[in-house]
Amino acid sequence: MVARFVSVANVCKNGGQTMNIFESLKKDHQDVKAHFERITMARGRAAATGKRTFDSLAKMLEVHMLAEEKIFYSELKQHDETRVSAFEALEEHRIGKFLLNELKGGNQASEQWQGKFKAFRSIVEHHIEEEEEEVFEKSREIFEKSELEEMGQHFLEEKQRIMAPPARGKAKRRRARAA
Image (tube, rainbow, N blue to C red; front, side):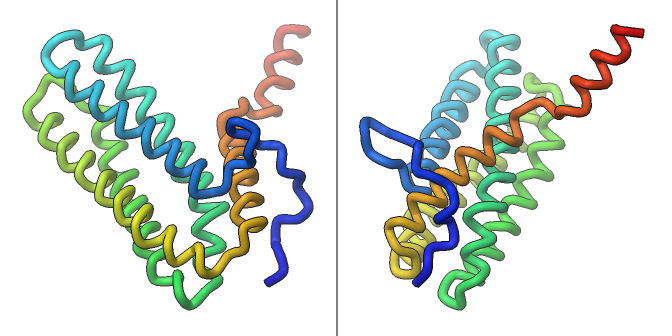
């Protein structure tokens, strides 16, 4: 199989070793689970802490999902063995995004928000478990090590691109200040 990602150098290092797509995704998954725990533990105690943690989780998940869809799932859709899994994961993302948007506008102290958060957490944790146990295994059979490493690098680059402020906005602000 010819690597599709040979144009970008592997510069992503984790303890001196290149991170592949699985390691990059698993790191994000661990961060998401830690945020879920902090939000659950903060419930009823420090509302400001819970809100900051939730806002951080929301941003992290939004960036993760966009990058994962563009870099990983787009590749999975190209192969018969993983196409259905890719579409299932995309559907789980769609549902997750819907719930995330509803949670953003809600009152974390309300029972309705807490119930919705529990459902959201359950969906995300199911998605993570299925992805790490089934999708990663199928992907190992399809992609070469170098391809997985390149996808890992592209995933991290895509996350950085998504998080970067839009260049046009900076130029407009500079022009407005100069006027």
